Structure formats: structure tokens, C-alpha cells
Length: 121
Image 1: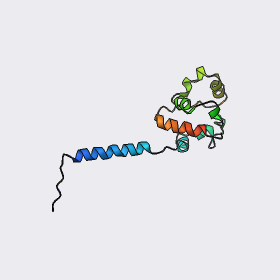
Image 2: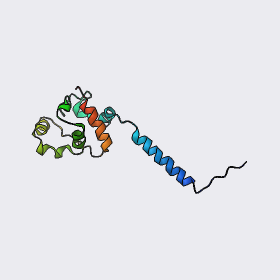
Image 3: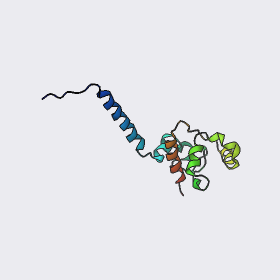
Image 4: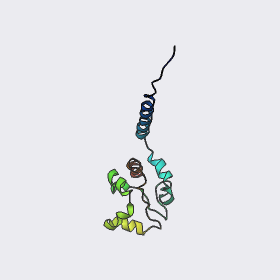
């Protein structure tokens, strides 16, 4: 018994397989903690998020931010300083400036924001 493969279906099958892999990857949960380490947030905010001389403590951020606001802020933090005196004072009190995270996807920035907002609540 011979199994014949229709060669015109092979590209379609490969495309479907690759698309399904993308959707599986995209739905996998992201770890805000691993992003916090990978993006080197610990260099300024410390491994526990309680700050260093370079950056402030992230303790109780939930009293100032929503997940949506922090997700958007992470794109370009310096752009927010002129209109936010609280953040300007914090920035002026530390050696380093907040790095922009526009290179992260919105989903990654959201996972990072959720993690940060849960630090020592």
C-alpha cells in the first residue's frame, strides 16, 4: 500500500503549523519577575524592589499607578516627568534616570507592571 502525499498541501500544512506555534507561544504566561531581572531593573531598584542609590523603592506603587498607567509609562518614562512633579522629585533624588522600555511588547510591559505593582503591597 502506497501513501501518496499531495505536494500542493505541504506548504499549507507548514503554514498552519507555524501559525499555531505562534498562537501557543503568544498565550504562554509571562513572568513579570523574570522580566524584572532580564531587563536589569534590579540594578537600580534592587533585587527586592526596595531601591538603591540609583533608583527608588517600588514599594506601594499601587497607591500611585494603575496597571494601564504603568504599562504606558514604561514606554518612555522621561516623557512623563515634565507633567508629574512627584516623579520629577523622585528622579532628581537618584543617580540614574529611568530607562525606557519601548522595545518590550505591550504584553511584556503589562506583565512587568503587574509584577511591580505587587511589590510589598
